[in-house]
Image (tube, rainbow, N blue to C red):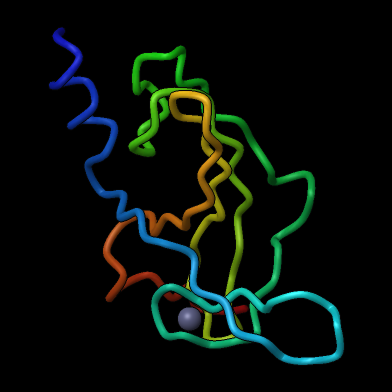
Length: 111
Ligand SMILES: [Zn+2]
């Protein structure tokens, strides 16, 4: 299988966006906003859910970067699931969010 086809298959169903944040004051840094609804109340699903997507310097992670990606599963208080991606690409590290599947049908039954 050629690389372009492999990348296209890996990306199918994944929407990657820039991270959106908002200042909440208090000197704690910036708050991550849900990439689907913009809710400021977002939660990690747990450190045991964090995983690595090997890119093998060939776009094999499925996250639009050439190298490896660390994915942190997240959920907003409206029930949207998404991931924070820390991805390596040509000597630079990119922060992005990925929505797995259709954003319109992302909410699970419970939060
Ligand atoms: Zn949301």
